[in-house]
Image (spheres, rainbow, N blue to C red):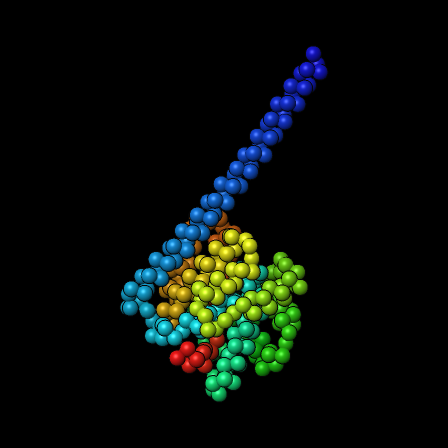
Amino acid sequence: MKTKLISMFLIVAILFSTSGCSNVSDDNVYQGEMKTEALKKLKNDLLVLNSNYENNPELQTRFKFKLWFRVLAIVVADVACTIYGNLPTGITASKSANDIMDDLEEKLNKAPSSSLKSNALDGLEIGSAGYIHNKVLIDMYEKYGESMDTLTTEQLLDLASNDVYNLTGEANLPLSKSDAVLLVDNVVSKMDLTKSISENIESLKTLTIDPELQSKLDICGTFIEGLQMVDDNDSTYFESANELIINSDLPTADKLELQDALSVGYASAKLWNTEVLEDYAE
């Protein structure tokens, strides 16, 4: 009799255990589906925001809308590395902007007075990902000047990581150095200034098979396309896009990740002196 009772208890315990695992699995699937839908909705909300700007010239504060799309294509590299990696990899990828400008300067026989704009920190929230992104690059250029062009990806990553740590107290390297270097090099190699933002985004999406990361990169690309319509001193579009993220149904961690990526994109657009690239677009 005792043996039968023990057997029954074991069966009941196994059934409860199996049921619990099933519920956890179902919950994970449900949460995954909810996140997928929330990402889709956020992208659609950004598309609506962009459409409002496109259809209302009074909202547009950049008058070189058709010319500037190639310039902002460079910003995609910063944002992609921030989404796929972290802030130091995004900062390191910014060297691609300077490399591209150097090539075009030689091609057009015309150089800007400086690679960086003088007001690249204006309007950025101190301590935000975008502020740190620009602050680190400005400090690096002040310290190393044109010798920045001679530094390897690994050397740039080391400098960026150290400076980010000094500003934030966070190591901010969830991936190994070798993986971080490979990520930056892969992203930079995918960039094509002759292509649109959406084309560059599609190219960069091939670097991952994770549909969630691909969706997040899509969202960043939609945001960067919207940035085309406002000038450096106009924060209204960035603030509106940020508000859409805050009000989305995404988990808090995903909201923060996207807010950091958009902050980096907004800041990067304010950072680089792009007169040469605008001439090239013409």
